[in-house]
Amino acid sequence: MRRVTRAAAHLMLMLVAAAVAFPVLWAVVTSVKPTAVLYDANPFAAAPTLDHYRGALEALPVVRVVLNTAIMSAAVAVGQVAIATLAAYGLTRYRLRGRRVAFAVLIGTALVPQQALVVPHYLMVSRLGLLDSFAGLVLPQLASSALAVFILRQQMAAFPDELIEAATLAGASDRLILFRIVVPNLRPILTAVAIIVFIQTWNEYLWPLLATDGVSRATVQVGLRIFETEQGTAWGPLMAAAVLVAAPLVVAYAFVQRRVTDAFIRSGLG
Amino acid sequence: MTALTRARPVAYLVPALLAVGLTVYGPLLAVAVLSLFDFNLTTRPPEWTGLGNYREIFATPGAGQAFWNTVGYMVAITPLSVLAPLTAAVVVWRLGGRLVAFYRTVFFLPVLVPPAVGAVMWEWILNPVLGITDEPLGLLGIGPVDWLTDRVPAFAAVTVVSGWKVFGLSFILFTAGLTTIDADVMDAARLDRAGEWRLLRHIVLPLLRPMTTVVVFATVVFAGPWTFGVIDVLTQGGPAGGTSNVYYLLYQQAFSFFSGGPAAALSVLITVGFGAVVALQLRATR
Figure 1 (cartoon, chains in turn brown, red):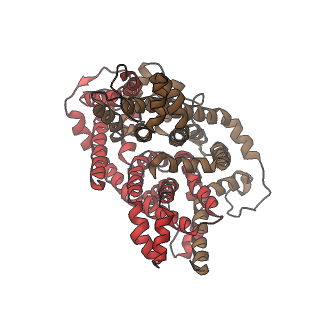
Figure 2 (tube, helix red, strand yellow):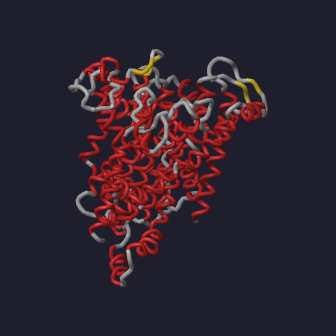
Figure 3 (tube, chains in turn cyan, green):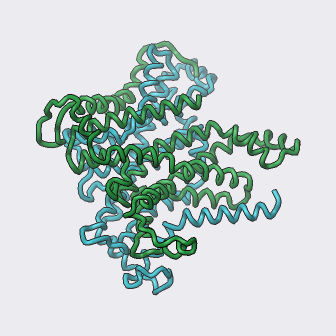
């Protein structure tokens, strides 16, 4: 490509990057502005202050809600991957009667929007007395694993026969083959699927909104609602809190950027 | 992997079947049955009403609008969820070099900021009192816009904020698709002195077709949930249902008005509609 074209392309991409990052950067700028100049568009209108962060931490147990979200997302990710691994193994290792049907039943969940099931989910979880608990948060989200089943079955179907035959000849049981040979060899793809499910669950808003009450089990998105009161919105503390709750995953991503990108590439979605 | 014919394999499938039974198909059946009863999610015992709930939900003011808005969001978001990320991914891929990691990081950022958190950041930008959008718009000859209270701007705002998130996801998916393109194919084409545009039209885009399907699919699947959080923060479906979608209507029916019956009927209708869209999409891309 010619140099002019390259420069123009970079300029365009930089503009897009600036536009994408702007809301987050503007939130950071706002969060350190004194209340008196909050509505001043000039970012350097006054010396920065950490007052809003103090206010945010007083109003919202930030660590608590971040931990809640992390625990929920990790539990859903591990649960889905575990369930899907077993299912994919069962589907590929055995010539089961009705395995086509079983596969269709598992993949068919992709046709059902989870959000349309909140009424029965709510009734079920409240009857079980699991409202406002991690179990209640996690359980209804466990089954939307169509993607995980699909990817893992594909990967296992392509798994080299020689490895398994050798193990079988050596007298290994099927379970041993799964845990000692298949799982360790598929670890990159299992991690990839877990990362994707984790991010997806981290973004889930509606179900945690319904299944929690107060901040003891609230996720980050639900927790932020504290700042929108009848008297109006406390913008300063709200921006500080938004920055605080968004930061952990963004920082974590900065460290494992390659892995996350690779997760999407490796998942065979490519 | 070769398949075996032996006993006790079912055990591997039990957890998965149990999970989908308890949290997808069971609830689906339950909601279908409940849609024929009148109930309020808490105290009142359910009462048989037949198809009454369906008649009621169709007669609900704003139901038609919510339906058309749902379709509208799906269409309006495609420039941000498919075209822009496709272009950006191809350009970044062709440029290569040191800035690739930077672009990937920044573009993916909104995916990591949950919808309601991102929407709060946008709400501050679109806030009429602050008005930081007034001056840039003034340069384009457009007067101050009430982003969150006028119907058309509010719809645009919800679309842009949702699109902001989906853009990053689609960008990464397209990037993943591009890495699978064989360098040899590109080199061979270049030896034949094919220009950038011809490479793009005859090699890159055709090879990206399967991924485009995935992206369109992901847009439909994610756009609903992500739009929900954005609507709840920015407009609560207003003004007068102008930015509501079917999921938001369902949420209000069930958990603001406690009309369990109509909400259950709406759940059934959404599932049928969603299933039909996905099935049609799969068919179209076969």
